[in-house]
Image (cartoon, rainbow, N blue to C red; front, side, top):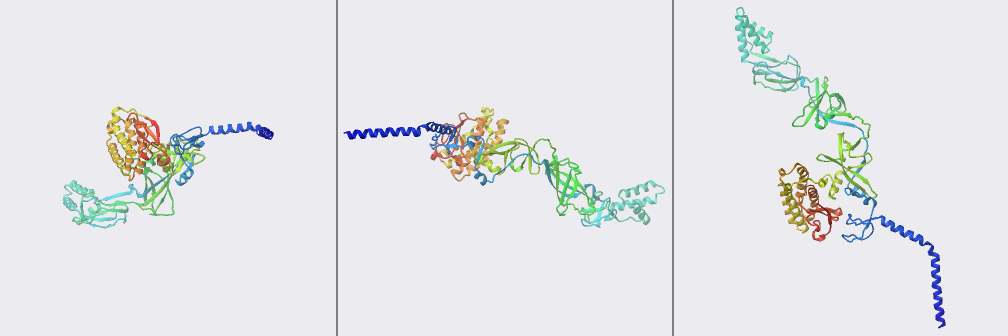
Length: 568
C-alpha cells in the first residue's frame, strides 16, 4: 500500500516538472507564435478566392463553389483587377496564335504614294487626217501603222466625180472669163475649198482637161497610229483616213484613286521607272491633274510631259512611279500604327490594346480615330497614348477569341448597352425574332437536334420578313448591324452536322440577340443567363423568359449549370 502511494506521488511530481519545463522553454515564444498566426490570417483575408470552373465567383476566404461545390482557388492580382471587357490570353496561347504587339509612339510623318500608269500619246500632237474631196479611194500609199510620214507627203489617191464636174465647170467658165470674170473666179474658189492647189488648177487649165485622180497629202509629220480607210471605200468630205501622231513629245498618265487625290497636285515630283527600260530611273513633275473622276473606274489621272526625241519611250509602256510627301510637323508627338493593327467595321476603326500580366496578357478593344493614311500605316488622331501596346499581327485571331468569350469585339461591339425608345408597334415587329430564338433555345435544352435545325429555319424566315419600313431610323441603324450577323450565324446553324456544332453557333446567335434585346427591349421579363463552362470554359450567355436555369449548351447532361447574369 505504501509502495503504491509512493508511485502516485512520484508520477505527480514528474508531471508537474514536465509542465514547468514546458512553460520555461515555450512560454516565451507565445507572443511570436500569436503574431505569426495573425499574419497568416491577415494574408488569407487579403486574398480573393474563385472557382476554376465558375470564374465569376469571388469570395474573400477559401471554401467551396456555391454552384458546383469545387474547392475555391486563390485569384492572382492581375486576374482580380481584370476589367470585365478585357480578354485574357496565356503566353502559350499567344505563341500558338502567332500574336505580336508593338509599343505605339511617334513615327516618320512621310507619305510615299505609289502610282501606276502608262505612256500615252500627247493629245495635242495627235492628228486625224481627213479627206477634203468626196470620192472613192483608189490607192493607199501608206498602208500600215507605225510608218513615218512627212508633211506634204502623198498618202493616197482619190477619184471624185464631183471634182471632175467642178473642173469641167471651171473649163467652161474659162471660155467666158472675159465677159463674166466673177463666174470664173467662183469656179476656181470652189476647187480651192477642196484644197486643190493653185498649181494643180493652172495645170488643168493649161492642159484643158480635168484631172481624174487627186492626191491626199499629209497635213502633219508623224507616225501613223491607225488606218481608218481601205482602197475602194467611198468617203465624204471630212471623213478620216489616218490617225497620225507626233511622238517627239509624250505623256505619262498615272491613275489616281479617290483616296490619293489629296496627295498629288500640279508641281509634285515623281520618280518613275519603265518596265521595259530596266535599270533606269526617271524624274518628272506633274503638269496636270484631271479634275474629273471616271464614272466607271472611279479614278482620275495625273500626267507628266516627257521629251522623246531619241524614241526611247513608246506609247503603251507600263510605268511605276513614287510621289514623296512630307507631313507638316505640329510640334506634338503623333502616333503612327501599321495598317495590320486596324480592324474596320462600318464607320468605326478599332485596335486591340494589350495589358501585361504575370501570366499572359489582357486584351481590350479600343476605338480609334484615324488621320491620313501613309504608305502602309495610319496616323492616329485619338484613342491611343504613346507607350501603349497594341496587337499588330494576329488581330483577327484575338478578335475571334474575344467574340467567342462574349466580350466586346469588332463583330459584337455591345451595341445594345444603350436602350432606344421603341414603340409598341416596333416591338411587335421584332418579337417574332425573339419568339423563334426562344423556341430554338428550348430545342437545344431538350437535346433535340432536328427540332433545333427546324427552329433555325423558322428564325431565318423571321429575319427575312422583318418590316424595316415600320421601324424608326434609330432601330433600323441597329438592325443594319444585327441582321447580317443573324443571317450568317443562323445559316451556319441550320447547316450544322451535329448538335455540338449547332450549340457552338448558338453562342454567336445569342450574343447578337442579347445586344438587340438590350437596345430594343421587345419583351418584358427577359433574363440573360450565363454558363461559365460552355465554350471551352470561356463562358457563354443566352436569353430566357424565366429565372430558372435550363442550359442550352449542355442540355440534360448539365441542365442546371449556370446563373442569371442580368435582367432586361
